Image (cartoon, rainbow, N blue to C red; front, side, top):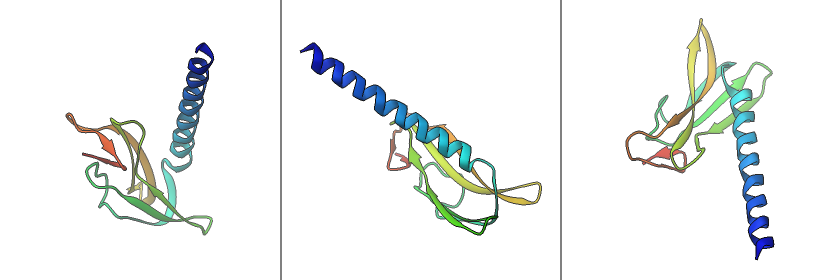
Length: 108
């Protein structure tokens, strides 16, 4: 009995560590990334529409990133904007407003 509980606890901790690591890696790699061109499907910083940002990087590569849920209450939103005349891809973690929850990269 205790072995099963311990296994589930260890598995839960491992999953949590993995999710936190992925979120941190995405935040570090994408935040304020200077790009040549950037498009987004949800029209900008929009928590109520699931979006995909596609950008052409300075190294010549094209990359796409999708908005995603961190938890049932937090959303990771990618968007394009301009900083000091340079196009950048940025990322923000936000809490879904009111009593809404995050499902499929959108607050509903």
